[in-house]
Amino acid sequence: MIGISKLYCGTVEASDPLRYGRSSRDLPSHLLQFSADKKPVVVWNITSACNLRCVHCYASAGKAARELSTKEGTELIAALADYGAPVVLFSGGEPTMRKDLPKLIEAAVKAGMRAVISTNGTLIDRDMALRFSDLGLSYIGVSLDGLEEVNDSFRGVEGAFRQALNGIYHSMREGIKVGLRFTMNRRNVTEIPRIFDLMRKEGVPRICFYHLVYTGRAKELMAEDLTHGQTRQTLDLIMDRTKEMIDAGPNVEVLTVDNHADGPYVYLRMVRQGNPRSGEVLELLKMNAGNSSGLGIGCINWDGDVYPDQFWRHRVLGNVLNKPFPDIWDDPDNEFLVMLKNKKDHVQGRCRTCRWLDVCAGNFRARAEAASGDPWAEDPACYLSDEEIS
Image (cartoon, rainbow, N blue to C red; front, side):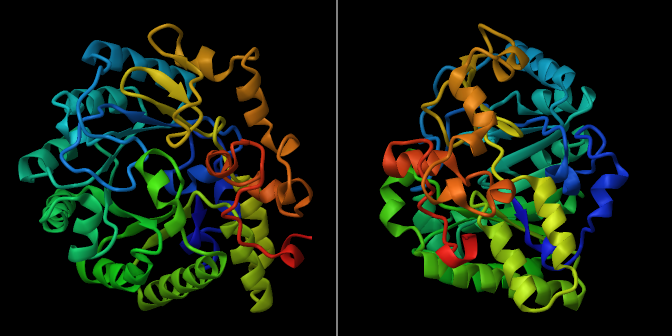
């Protein structure tokens, strides 16, 4: 996760995370990526049920399948809180289809965790938003992949865009922080300026631009991933539009996700521009430490299986019904997990000799494996030139 607003626009300084000791428990949410202990943010796919059928769903969600019970879920949340996981992100499927979601949110908040939701937003009415607000939900991320026509083509349901906007309006009216989630590919990259316009018009304070990861139904979109040239142009556009918004006054947070080459790319652009903050940005990138799969991000499936991240769904590390999450996450006998926690020692190809390895950590291993069959191969989505990495 690369904070464009934080790094390129200077909304965060290197001293900010240091002030909190870089502890996951103590850092405010906007600084959590700079923690030193890398206690995992846990994505819990609480259900496989979904009212939409998105063409790029990493979980291939649709029909309901075996789910952890409410009791099993609250016990899991207690274990995560005791372990020190700072955030539980309820996802799916569509998490709002699960009737006990309010009870799970309440359990997380009472345990001292930050509870957030990743949703398509279409089912959030006023009553649901009010309930979430009363429970202390920290954040709602709503997936939009363009304006009406483009978004609905991704969702497979006409009217999904307008329903999602209604969910955003209800949530914001109840004082819940809301952000957008946008997965970039050739079908929708031209929508990005319109998404920025939507943010400005509606006062949405946050957006995450996701790079495509070839898992789940998104495998079928591999050929529609951005070219390296398109990725560079898109990052330039995102930086420029973010700076325009911040210079105009709105307090917005803009991030890119799942391609850690973005960090060096932002830094190198700042160096070319003679930006005096470039050295400080490099320090923040070192704190961020690049890809955190199996370390600072983890995923739990609806049936209790544990994965290194939400995209790497065939790499099962264990199941929380058989073994507590902390014991799974810190298992010294799981050879693959131990290698993943030290991935910089195992990556191959261009990654192995890249000057940015300490900043990027070898980029996204799930995408490398999806493209090549080798989890340690170079990430094909790295768009930095040989000159830039040598």
